[in-house]
Image (cartoon, rainbow, N blue to C red; front, side, top):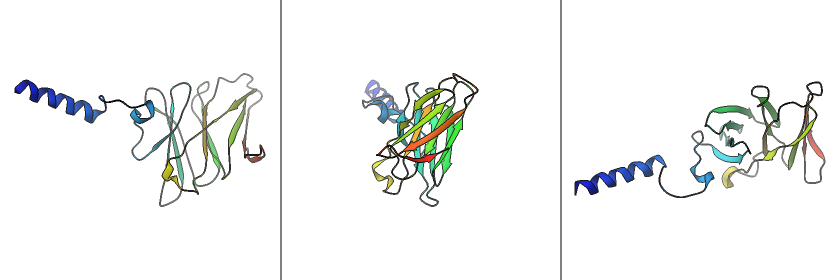
Length: 159
């Protein structure tokens, strides 16, 4: 009887801590409280999305593969943020309504950003989001430039 009780207690602890049970990578990922997983990058980093119901501002947070915060961006309208150390910089974009793609010209390289998936309950007025982990600069002299495009391939936001 005591062995069964200990086994039941161990299983309860495993279930509560998320160590037991199935599910895909997206269902196991734990992000900041209240945020939704929006995108996964090739290096294992995760893009988390949230929007304040009070202010309407979009908040993006990137956690690296070890779960450490590596970048964030907060805005109520189209904006972009570049954060991180040289060689491992993160670009986050809050695009205007209708945005479908975001492309960085990054120090001599063209980098297509990943389009984030917004949760089903995000609302029709939620702005599209994009992100990417930038490669080391190929040519320091060239700098960077962002273009956000709509369905027709027209630039709707640029910097």
